[in-house]
Amino acid sequence: MFGGSTIQYLSQFADNVHQRPAPEAQHASTHHHQAAARTARPTRPVEQKASPTIFPAMARTKQRRRESTGSKAPRPQEHLPPGAPRIALDPRFILARSYLLGDEEFELEPIPDMAREVFGVLLQQCRMQDAGIKPRGRLNVVKIQDIGPPSEGEVPSMDSALCWAEYGNAMFRAVEKKFNDVTKAEGGTDSIEEDDSDIDEEDVELALELMDTSWKIFLHHVNEGNEWALEQIPRNIRCIGDLYSFRGEFPNAAHSYLMALEYCNKAWEKMKESCDPKDTLSTLEALRCKGQVVELNALVARALLACPPGEDVVCQYNNEDEEDPFVDVIATSAQRLSDAKSFYLMARSDLEKEVIIRHEMMANAPSDKVDLSRVTKEILLLTKIVNSVGNSIKETKDQS
Image (cartoon, rainbow, N blue to C red; front, side, top):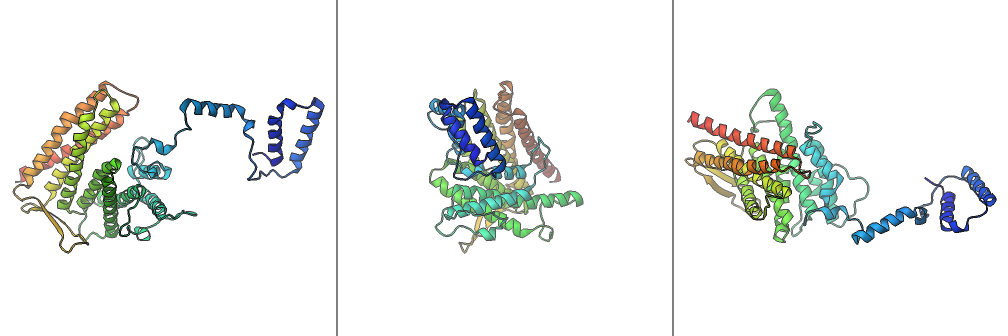
């Protein structure tokens, strides 16, 4: 903004203000510098900086702030929960999450394709940082083949684990949205068929690989005592269950939901002991934790109902590292409907006795710290999921 001569003049003026010259000399000096400024090119050398004494009031304010707090202003990563990666505060990461989830306030629909591109660039950056390579220039949109899985014995950072999970979820949601748009336009089933040519099966397979990779990395950091990584695993497994459900592999989906439900039940038992009903934020955390339990119970019931009738519900995974695939019988053909009803009843009971009651407690003691309207929308959505499962059970009984 200032030329080099102007900065020198201001610095000298501030440092030697007590040696102010006579009015005539001051007028001549100002005249001289104005003429020099008109003829000189207004460039500011990089090595030349303005003297801090130009803004003494600002310097005193900063000094008083340091003395009152005892340290400098906190950095953004200091606001993160313990163990959380710094990438979660990256503006690009926040933007990608908004693309993935949409924004009801501004009536913005989710755009998972855009989220996938941003998460892919962030994953590339995190992988380069893990390898000790400093990114230079602009990073382009990448594919998972360009990044590659972790090598044997390598433990990627939490930043990479989070980006892996979000990248895979965004890739799957992009395929899911494309399928749903086509289904709404033409009419059809809620899951893909083997001969469906409109679905990019390669993207679905890559998304599953990405989320499975992030799950393994999260588990490694959990074993090292990272509690934040433990909180991410249920959401990660739940997304894997959604992918299996989308592919029509309902036994695998039910198995994934059951694993996520086990994590959430443990988190709820731990939170229930420390929850303070008088604390609004504590009540909100407990409400959302129990809401996850309710939703997963409903999803397990829905997956069991979608399994073929007259057959055992058998989960099967093909593990590349082992010769024999993993096989687990979740429910027999005779137990399938009764098990689905049991999970539905648990979801409905927890919804009425825990989630709605805690919501009423928050409504009776409103706080500026919590957006109650958003919490209400989440509970309404949860209620719709539970009611839809109940209607499915009723229809199944009527048909039988």
